Length: 567
Image (tube, rainbow, N blue to C red; front, side, top):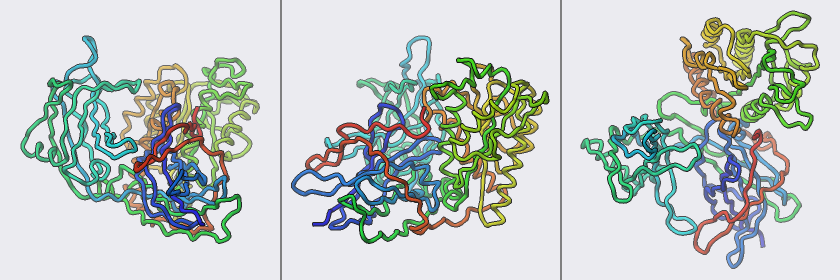
């Protein structure tokens, strides 16, 4: 007979060696090779944080083992950046899988503000703990009832009486909208190793938090039966705005073949859910603009000053290794470019250089490579390599004002052209430099001059120089905040750490540019099936999923995955 397909959705870790997490499974569609699943899944997504999901299709076998029918991996950011927030991929065993991503439309939110008082120190005599809190709820998993983390706060450094920032939490994620569901509220000492130390905990509910805030009551957290400090609930209010904390992954449609042949009849493309995203305020958000077709254009500027060292000598910052292993400039370009490329349909990226001489004349904004724009991220790398054979002499000082002005001009031209066509464009300038700028005051003045352009500037410091001047630029602009500085060395252990740090402010900066200029998002783009670019068959992830009797699926082995752009 015809197969009874269902899909298991697994979140692949961006950290090497970490275990994948199964998010859930769809309903079973009986006797069809063109299932139209209706179940959606919540996936937390932040720009810059690699978020990849594995969709693995099974044929349900009532008396026996479910049979694997194929799988595909999707990058949530790339799906968001695709037209209509929809992507498709062919599967190795035949068939095509469609995935749509849209903004969560949760109805209930919890506004929560807490602080700690006289928490018990876990760091010994000479240091203080770095507290954060997390909520856990009980879920029914493969091995029975288990506690799973559903929310975690930022940590506060060196403080035993922390004042955590106010947060707005999706009640669906927190407690399945059951305000009386028992939650474990745990306070931990943050450790950079990830092995956080429990400081104390309590069990409560959303209603318990609300009641405590109204009555002015506090909680005593405990560890091993002993009091370990006080939690004070300043605000705990429930209200009904849509939330922007998660992105539901809607498994809209797949066509599946149990053999190598494609199905004879093409699938119908589903309409999918409408994307409407008023989040914590009434204004439009980054996701609204992306859903309306706004493109994000990347430009890159590279430091060719002499302080980088002779690129022919191993150990210098621009050294091009014969074994093709990337230097730190290349690592940053590949990691950040791989994230942003998904939001740019034409994959054309301008590449500029600064700090070098041509014909004895210092140039602080010159084209790198033979073309005005490079083709894709690999094109940026190729143009970067070609620059060293262009006759330049690495010089100095470090001046980035000219590339900033060029990028702003480029961004304004792109947005004006897009607006004339009823579209929208926003630009990001990635500056890679090995030292602080020579004239901080002039650079600060330029940052204020360009702050009203549709542009964000991300500066990544390469090497071991003193970058305090760059941090000053980040912290002291008088216009809208458009500059973010990040030191590469602090994130050289993890490409996902680098991309998160460099791109986390971009969504708000883009949103603020459009809103202060009175530019509303375009209506969500709807895409016809023939407009969807179908990705080629990829090597399948070696992941074994077990199905326990009466329980949900669990990962028994495999699942190693290295995201694109990882170093």
